[in-house]
Length: 389
Image (tube, rainbow, N blue to C red; front, side):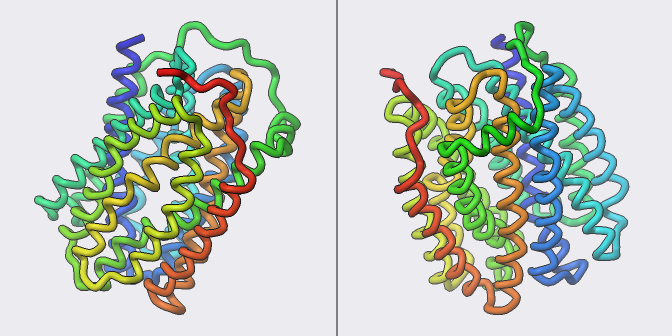
């Protein structure tokens, strides 16, 4: 099993390094090369997330039903390689971008969901927070390393090279997916249908958590995804974008392990409440920035927001359900993130078109305060027993 855990770490390292381009520089490409408004970029991102919302719960319970994760990951990698290497660079019409973004959303969300499930399949103790964080952290390390490289070699983010890089990264991810083995001893999986999904959603603990998670992610994603455009509006260059996202990754890496281990000791709720209080503070500070270096400093606060929300919700949902419902529950979580990623970019993008980027950040500060209220009042602890170690 040690070999498989190692391969999963390599998988996360490779997979999340592609987000250097997809998350940070493709929107700049759409804004500056294709001439899209911030609202149009937000709509494209929203369409991608919408497709993830539509398909992820079905893919999650289908995976539970057949007891396999890898086929979904492998097929998704193949499709992403084709789309990014042969299709995306040649697009010109906004509506063709919308269609391609819809397809991209399905396959990216599938990989994210199934990779998380594979990690949980290999969890061997009650310390699932520590287990997940110890693997997920390698995604942040991969992101950080490649982001630093782009900072020193900005030619890598030029369109002709960028899309080749994305495809090569996904080819490496595909190779690791073919090598890694699924657990030999599977949990007995019962027949799953949409009644199971409805039953999970109707549970107050799951429903309240998903509501918090969706609102929180609307604010966080809207703020983080527009950092690159905010830097450009303040006169920053590609290197400032690279260093800003490098700062966020650098800060989150050690804290993912810290939060994962701490959640096993003190529970999940205290950390979720803490990050919900800190998020409005972080978002509001963006409105005070005067130059790109201010943003780079703010990105260090990623350790107190994304480092928590990127790890604890996965293990929180894992706590709430039976093992045979694991992929279905993670599909619900992925659906929640996809739903917030659908709503957030559209709202924040068009708010930015109307009131400017800093007006958008003031709006997102208010949104994040709503998640704070929900976390404090409605989220319940998911662990019946807290690990003493």
